[in-house]
Image (cartoon, rainbow, N blue to C red; front, side):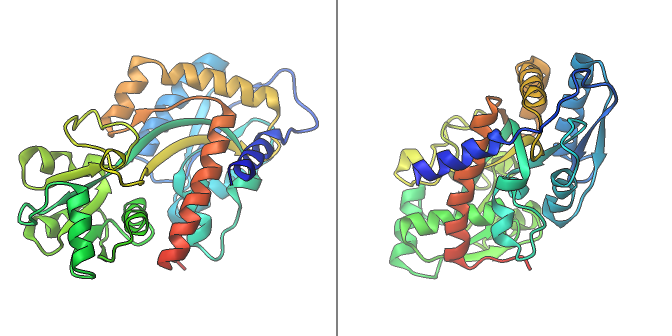
Length: 320
């Protein structure tokens, strides 16, 4: 599997357009955001667009193309000319796992996009109602194993990363617990507070106030390292549960984007992400900056695709 994902990652960054305009960029660049204006992805995109415009000497226009869980806007870029004037700031949904959730997927991110750079990531958090008499994720899973199908885990919606993370935890631990989808983080939290569901698996930022106040009991965070906002909350990995899961943001272009364009965008965006302003903006949404090479993003896209494909098939999750 490692060799296969490495080959996929290499292929993702090897596609180079046959010609490259030496005066690039000579006109404004469009950064498509496949989500509505005003959200966290849009805010991060506008920060990067401003900094990128200053470095390139050209305006970078943010174009919001919301719809189909990010697929619509990302597809606009997958179909664009690979001339360096159309890129996308998308998330792990369209870039990794949506193709296994939708039967009619308009593009394949591993074949139709050129990875440029990872931007940031937000881990999931796992918390329970205080009346659930467990003090760790391991204890919760032991309880679920002893009472198959009796414990319930709320999530922010069918096919969301919160839902898939809960399914990943269940698959890895070989337990059966009831998954309860909601329309967003807030209704799931309300039912966890009331005890209607025993636990919730949501982006950690949605859970910070409830865990800090003691209204919910935090059991785990699904990042590799502990979440800075909750330093006392152990990771799932620390507790012996092999469940690393984050929703991440990344910038990509159409297939065949010229190597000089990829290299310049990667260099400049990495420089922007290293600034205190960018780190603070991502931290505002509970995200940590990532950065790195195009090859690292290609590897992330390939390995996350492999991971979520297995979980989605095992749990029979579908969105159409």
